[in-house]
Image (cartoon, rainbow, N blue to C red; front, side):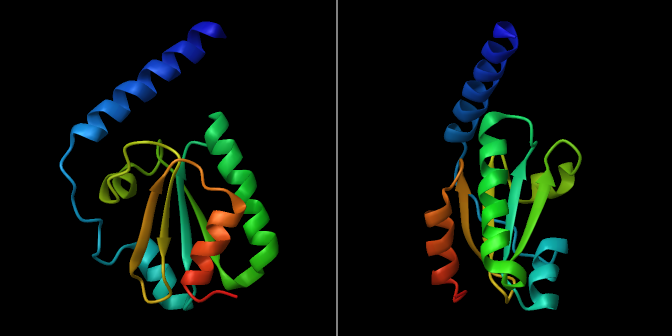
Length: 132
């Protein structure tokens, strides 16, 4: 168990170093299933890029479950498994997990945040997007 934790930490550090050295690029803006989902339903979408197995991903999933319970059908929460949905992960240039992407009801990407966000931080972002 110790060896696998150390391996994960080393992998995370390596991924962070590669990511930090990359020049900034614009996020995907072309239509894709996530943007189309926001536009077609007229609701903001929170996209959680992760694996669901690391501690941070599990923490983020639990927080997003609270958001689902609080906001009901006012917000769409979509999990993207980076191991299975590589094309979508690549399109959004996700290098570290968890990464949250907020898409407004018009399909505009308004925030991309690496690392877990707490309940209050997500609530504030949704408020900025006009969700009550």
